[in-house]
Length: 140
Image (cartoon, rainbow, N blue to C red; front, side):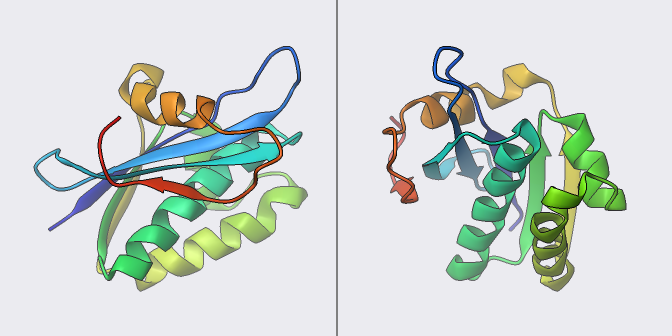
C-alpha cells in the first residue's frame, strides 16, 4: 500500500520562529500519523526539508516502502528532484534522496497550500524551544 505524506511549516511572523509538521495517510486517505517539531530560526527551505526528512524516516522506521510526498513548496520539490538548492540545504537533500532511493515506489509532487492545512495546523501546535519530534496517533 502506498502512503502519502503532506508536509507544512508555518512561521510565527512576530518571533520569526519556524516549525515543521506533517501528516501521513494510507492509500485510502485515512489518518495514520501526524507529527510536529519546533525548529527555531532558519530558512523556509530548511523547514520544508526537515518536514520531508521526518516523514520519510517515520515511514522507513515503520517498514513502509511505498511513498508519495506532497509539498506546497515548488522550490523544494524541484530541489529534491534535481538537487539544486542552496548549499546549506544540500546535506538534507542528499539524506532525503538516499532514503527515497531505498523505497520500492516513490513520488514527490507539488500540491496547493490548501491541501496541507492539517500539516500546517500541526506545525503551529509546537512548543517554542522544544525541538523533540512529537507524533500523534489520532486525528486532532
